[in-house]
Image 1 (cartoon, rainbow, N blue to C red):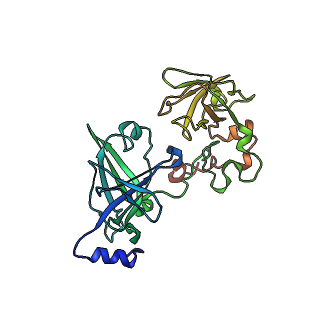
Image 2: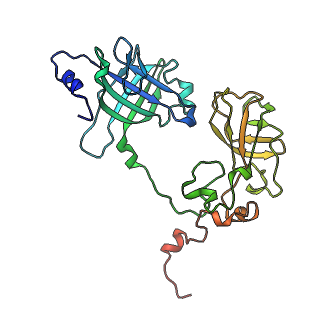
Image 3: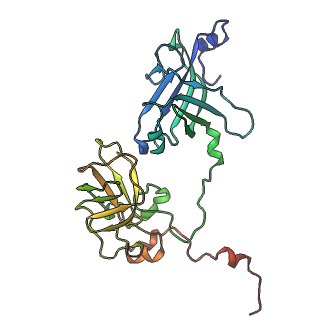
Length: 304
């Protein structure tokens, strides 16, 4: 029974039910981290596995666990009042709960030391909000099998500086270059009212900027590295830059303040010429610019 203890099996088989469902949601570090725990019981329970306290969640409801022997991902739907620390409209828009890890299990409320009876593990899927409540779908682990796990051929490079996708080394697969050589660290000296334009003396342009003259940081990204900011650990893509200033495609989900610390990576448009002329990094280029395109592949043979 999924690692269920003998004592918990006895509770599950008893004529009187003394177990309560518990849910644990753990946000990704890139979304600010943090763990939300709650139980359907009317008193707090301490899980003997992780030592966390699962507090009652008034107004919350969870559907039955849906699962079968097919390859369809099982799911559980959670509904709760749209107030913090529950998922709120602002936190959903910010992506705080995207792909959060989820666990659903039973605990015996009269004796939690009997351990868990595991029901479901997975990630948070679709989120929705109403006037006063939010709903979250927990999708089972088999959901991962429906995702693409291989690279698709493309003419441009798959990697960008600071994107963290360095499988097989990324931009540094033969140690000829490092992200540390093409990043700057600093603090913000000014933030526009819409949060799109950021200023700092750390934004220094390169001698040979990439990205068609839009600036050295265009196609790059800026990562907030400040524990005092709600945006800590989050990143935003840079649209254009000039000396001492960058313009973002979209603002950060939460307001930025002057003095916020950041790390900014110089941009790369993924073209082979940029890899050669700006970064002298052709050995690490990860694209297929010379691969025949589909038109060439299906073209009719001609004598001329």
